[in-house]
Amino acid sequence: MTDLQQYIEQTIIPRYDAFDGGHRRDHAQMVISESLKLAREHGADEQMAYVIAAYHDLGLSIDREKHHIHSGEILMADEQLRKWFTEEQLLIMRDAVEDHRASGKNPPRTIYGAIVAEADRQIDPLTVIQRTMAYSRKLYPDGDFETLYMRSREHLNEKYAEGGYMHLWLNSERNVQGLEALRAIIRNEDQLRALCREWYEQNN
Image (cartoon, rainbow, N blue to C red):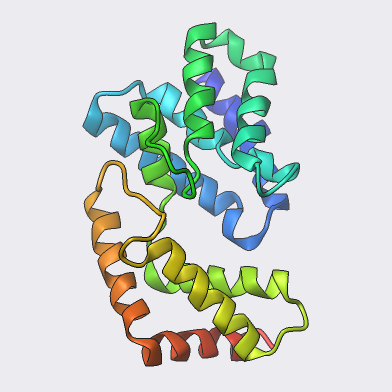
């Protein structure tokens, strides 16, 4: 293990343990793994992709809505990274962290932003639906099933349905297939309602 890997594994990754269930250590490690794979496929610097993935959600410790901006600030403020990267590299990495968010309207500014954005898209249909219901519960802690279901259905349509705001910038096979499967469920309201009901009953 290199000094950089040791620093990231011992100091940065453990910060994810304090976040919500959809953004814990396993999420960070998955994004790192997928980012490294995509970096190799696209000829990008693997160390940069590794660090970008490790820092991409740290801003959740400050604010969810602007967490991508705060994550970039946290990366730039970490003096330890200057042992391994130039100022120019750090600025590219900050931009990539800022560009990872699914609600971003503009394409990522660099291949590194595209890599972490693509890696962050965990389009496993069941996981997406469960996380959407969990976040609806956070917004409406006393909401009944219909309240949570209607909010979740609206969000899933806005983000993932045809014409939704979520973009795949590199069209990895994993995400293309996952998105097609998720869209099929969104179109089938009986199936979507049943999956949401299953989550609701397991978490009440």
